[in-house]
Image 1 (cartoon, one colour):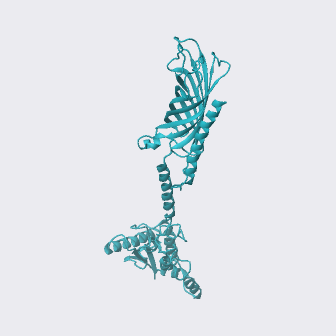
Image 2 (cartoon, helix red, strand yellow):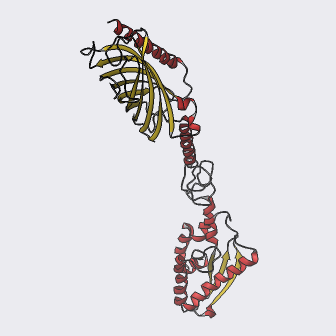
Image 3 (tube, one colour):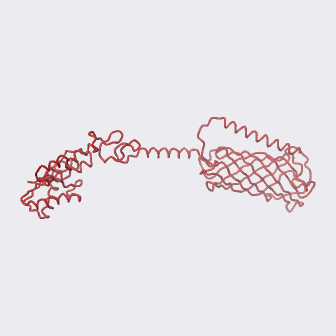
Length: 428
């Protein structure tokens, strides 16, 4: 009973110290958000032991002696400090020079754990190797197969300290190698169980060495043993940069980011206000940059209404610029969709044998000097002329001329420039 009281006192004092440390930690102001790492782990180890003292004369064990086993559960408060509760089993046997004996030893200990690798900043040179230190107190029981207590056991308090090397095998498992020293208080009998001890206090000592595996529990990517706050900071910064890049995307290329753009499908080249909406002063639904060019290409309602009052409507549409042949940038080859316009003129000329047509070519303000654009506009008119002649229209009824640059549209608008790269018709 006396030994059990001492053992309880040791464990109680140690637990009180740990609790006080937790309370102090809780009272301190937090300097950073809670890190996302796993805290629990299970440790499984096996290896050898060596009882050092006390042992009776004539009794010896192998150096080292087999067998040592231990199983533990560990909880880390943060990346540097934690607690573990572990259970140990050892068997002591006589060697070939000893009188025969066999003893079994059982231990349970509550230990504080320090991540020495993180404390010493090992992460600056390795992400694979680590070192833990552990120390604590607990209860032990020795059960020999002979001597006065062969049918009983010798209960004692233990104090344990050791170092555990780690090799990281993955995010959820590590290979470990541990060396520990275990001291005993109130050990009444020698490890062989044959004699009572002659001293009191801390009178027992043994060593263990083991290899094992640590299994990390939890849903986070890493355990506290290997977690680096700088990685979290980098990940958070990357996420923030990605968010900013997403906000600054400009799908319609109008200079207004999508998160501010109230009209994210503005035509290319059209000027917009600060909200990304195309400028439309008369509020007719057509951007101002396109309105003048569209008026040149399409008939207005007023002009179509005027056709009902007399005259040749087809001739008016052809001569007034409602029907045109369009070209790509720097090209004198008519666009495919413009062959309908050429066909309209062919049909009109065939149905009106006395009619004559003048073909007028134009170029935009981009792509070269005035002389180049004048030559390009003439080649465009000549290309339409050749198609009409090849379609059966007598060349004596046709003429063509290059008119050079048409500067009637905003030259910064790609859509508007497309409209002035054309050949128009004048019927006589």
